[in-house]
Length: 244
Image (cartoon, rainbow, N blue to C red):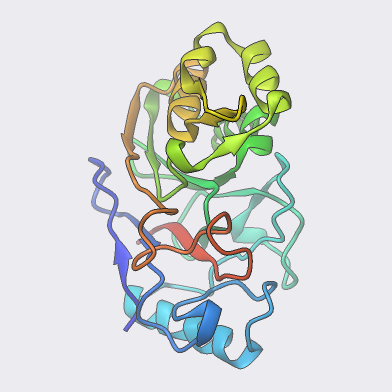
């Protein structure tokens, strides 16, 4: 059976959300076992069965609005998503019947809802999307004051495993001075980046004060999470939000 994490945020009861683990599916080998990505080389039949298991386990009202994620900042309306996954990295839903979803295997998934429980969103925030403004674009698409939003940070790579080059350090340093504290130099003279801290800094800058989650370790926790940094041939987890 599909297994997942339930976000620890004080969302209204009609807001539903989950972040899947890698366990409880039918995929084999490098994709063992709940791989939900159809683009990673897994058997298509296995991915379809995993998605069916997910829908049944979470009692989803519809097929999730899967995206063709491109590390950008495009946001789509999950209620009006086309049959083929659109090139986008975030989605929103303003009523029951649609399921927002992003897939990750190290990148940071960020889920949103408003305090009244009238809308939800999901954003795929790897370093490129985070630096490019995907969180701001998602907040704008949600159409309520940022102070009225809750955000939850799902499973992502931990700082000790996320080595990046000077271009990443420079990109975030230009965005905000406080981002410097989210980097530390390693023995190789490169940088270890804290995606969670960078996301919290960006959300604070955008006016979102209610931020939950974080602290996961996709790279270190092989039993629960897929990690592209750990094994480039691997599956994808999903973080989902919808309204009942």
